[in-house]
Image 1 (cartoon, rainbow, N blue to C red):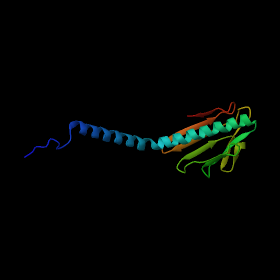
Image 2 (image 1 turned 120 degrees about the vertical axis):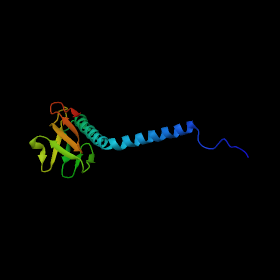
Image 3 (image 1 turned 90 degrees about the vertical axis):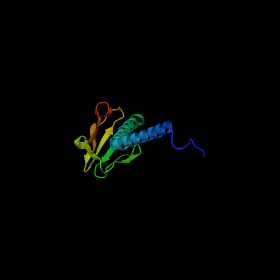
Image 4 (image 1 turned 135 degrees about the vertical axis):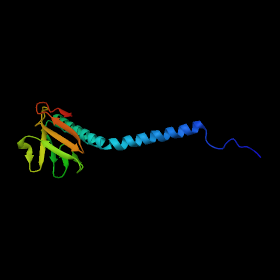
Length: 145
């Protein structure tokens, strides 16, 4: 009768497998828990980037440039900057702009060649998470809060 020493796992092998399982579980849990917040954050950051881009197009091209929000279609566009984006239906959008910049269910923020803008505020919310984007009229500065 011959005795084999390779019957089972070593303590080191078990520790390595348990560590890998623990890391995988933690990463998956973090990804699922933070996904909605990250998606709203990503949407808000994309919108801020688009607003800043439209502002820069106005200054470089020496023309008025606007970004138009269609609240009924959950989208925003800018012809001058060739932007067309859709916002998920589950995200609530509230747009605050001057009365002159509202037409039906759409509103706009205009950027002028000197860097200023018509100003406005965009509020995005989804399942208790909120993001606020403001554009100041004096210098066209776009901020995410």
